[in-house]
Figure: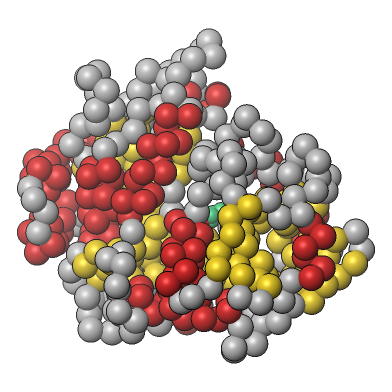
Length: 402
Ligand code: COI
């Protein structure tokens, strides 16, 4: 039977490489074994000769070099296709087959796939980091696996086990190791994607799901780099509604905010801060990240109430702040509190910890502290330090994979 969700070309490749890829997933996964097996999987000769222009980057594939041919100083947050992606499809017993690491490329879907027609799709974001000592690490990927499972439950989808998810992330990172930026230049952003790939016409869960993990080297998310953000509070468009799916990472949470972001950017703002859709009164989150406000020794962030995404970085910052002696409150935050805050910052995997320099609400602009002594800077340095190895990982968040 033809595996749905893969083109014939990829299917042929997957058949050719299937046995080594299977070995990988079945093994207890030592990084050395993985790296050597993956070389066989990811080096079809036609693929090696590829040269791709994406935006300003001309990228040459192939070779045994430690690093891909990338100008690491120019990394932003744009897709740079890498060598490999991980793919697996659900089976009739409700689990997922052994995944395969395939050359990165297009996938083929039925026009009636659940994801295309009814938005049955979830994504995650996590990162692989190259440390000064040469080791490659992942940061709390199990948290993303758990969140994907919660999302799958909400959208009536099948999802991979936590172990399979984490293993897929590891395989994706290792098979794209050349694309992990040098220390201090960025990270490999890893994008796990779960889609209803099976065909469905009437409104119902898709009969089959495909789990794909791809990756791209990234630098700063915002074009501002690490400069403070200028946010616009939008009380017309909302990100999520009560009883909806704002609390899970479904793809359908993102298209509806594009209009608000586009409008805000055209007016010179960095991004949009949304309010609750019922009373237009309480803070929710920014388009792609959670928000914290700081007043004295207290950090507050909107409580997880069904419309707020339970961010992995949000959770880390809560734990770091408590560990550093701050009081952390997860609660409703009336928009008026913005007037009185010392600092505001955003958190997310893609965004990291980003300071906010100003917020504009109803034509009133409020400015915040963003200096080197800010709480935001302390949170940022600690999180980055744990990821890069300069701060001890007391919480056990780091997984060394190579
Ligand atoms: C992430 O932070 O990983 C996200 O998923 C946000 C996305 C809009 C880039």
